[in-house]
Length: 189
Image 1 (tube, one colour):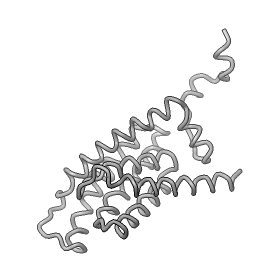
Image 2 (cartoon, helix red, strand yellow; image 1 turned 135 degrees about the horizontal axis):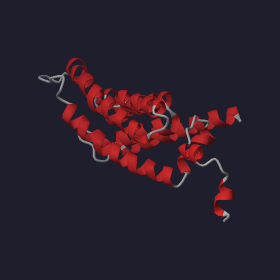
Image 3 (cartoon, helix red, strand yellow; image 1 turned 120 degrees about the vertical axis):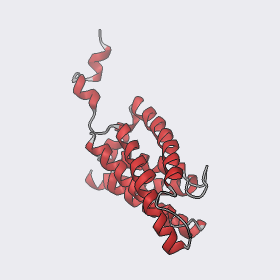
Image 4 (tube, helix red, strand yellow; image 1 turned 90 degrees about the vertical axis):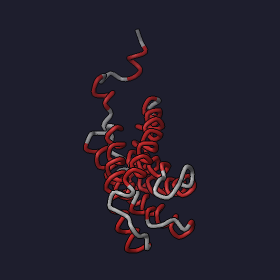
């Protein structure tokens, strides 16, 4: 079973990377990629912080080499993906904290780190450390909202817990703590 969940995690990671590369150009302008936030949060919730960090890194590298995207593809994604996963786990699977982690990690930290990277390695002149904050922050709010709605729907129909369980991810199922009776007993009157 352990080997099966490792294989499933790798397959899920590969799918998330592929989706991230494909959907990232949607609604994208330089410094603003809301679909990246959707992938970051979704991966962080489903696979955890380390896989989310790896996913964001791989997507960024692929986008940089194949699509000619500047280093913003990396600096703008890795902090949010990792922090989203950390806050989601620390909060015992509270989806709102995953979104907050992405907003802080990408919208603020990633934006601040991006300005010197773009100045020194990409040759952009006149950028202050707050230059990308409005764009990144807005993109993470848009992407965070989309991810919150999508993952909220998966929570509501019970699919998120099934996906997480099949991948061997630690799940804090709040509904089981409230009602410890089996589901079959709930339907009987």
